[in-house]
Image (cartoon, rainbow, N blue to C red; front, side, top):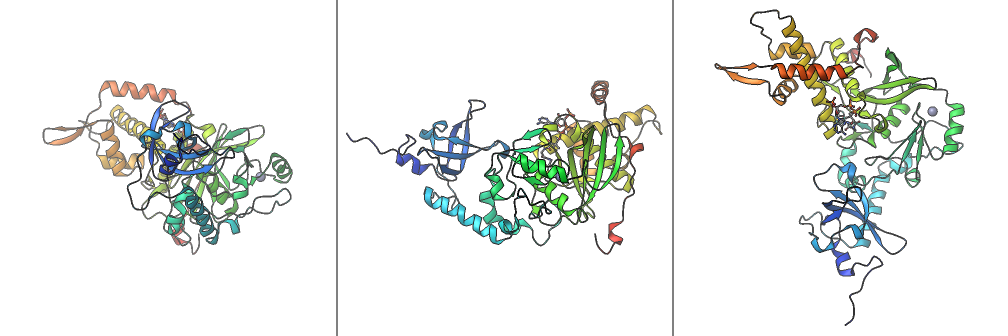
Length: 439
Ligand code: ACO
Ligand code: ZN
């Protein structure tokens, strides 16, 4: 009997036709060897005639999305896409679709304004300015969301090198296409300019006189500093920062204009300079009282407490402004973990401090008073009290109950936190942006 035709990959052509964009199939994840249901986002031919599939693992964060080979797919369990939009398409049709999308975006100002920083060209970086989050503005990428979506679901940058660290991006970021084809993009750790090779970076460093972020250093204690950068005055830096941040931030709409934002960059000092560890952005005027638009710790510095320090710093600014603040929603999974941790500690600390020296007997502290002490919005305080399971119904009213066990746990966890933001070291006056004609 004649055997069924196969493509170069060993799977039959019939099956290959079922492996379309939107189809779901169990995938063996190389890092864990587990079979996880994945959705095919895209596919591409390889030189050896095989194909690779870009997989999103269902119920997992998109930063785990990856290219896999067909031998990692359980082709006996393919589920075809159900919706009209994700109708099966042939591989060629799909590739055409992708390149058409690319063209549509180009007409919206992408590749035309994208210039890779060449060997000789050290002129200011011109990139499409993007700002995570913020008020609707003209130039919002969301206007092109439909055409933009497909392409931006796929990670486009292989690796970045910044200072001593190499980092693998988590998400799409609109770096110039010619740089995305390279194995590594080199980023000047001080001005955040992106370059195509280590030689270009070396040459750039001869000219780049920065050894810290631009803007004003508004906080310094020991080796930790924070710089305030105005998105209007330092547009190149702000745009490069957004481009970099986008590699690790996925859930926010992006906007072109950096003018309405301030950027607070946290650095760690050593003999070679003040090296960025993370940052948060903040709208100059927020109608919703957001005190953080986007927050990021560079992956090479994550899980060392900088995220918490940045959050603590954002609330210190709110305190000086005399406002209650809250981070812009939605929070990412890691954002929620970090805020939950900060809020829980802050609320417990305030309650314990109050109990140590109550102003009334029996002690009585309302939720609104807690909000004022912590500069936190009511909904964040209430959700934290609920998360900690501290609210109880007693004799017709809600009361906050703190057990000795919780107090002990909290003291132990605070003991581990050696580095805290110290308000004495902040040198900063808030500006009233509403009184200014222009940001
Ligand atoms: N897994 C489990 N817990 C984690 C993880 C993780 N990967 N990362 C942080 N946490 C927990 C920590 O255990 C810690 O809790 P603890 O203090 O109770 O031990 C808490 O979160 C804070 O940890 P930090 O070390 O201070 O946080 P980090 O420096 O890693 O930064 C951040 C946290 C900023 C969210 C970082 O993960 C990041 O940049 N992520 C990518 C960008 C992002 O998602 N930003 C938030 C978007 S929401 C918004 O912008 C408003
Ligand atoms: Zn530089």
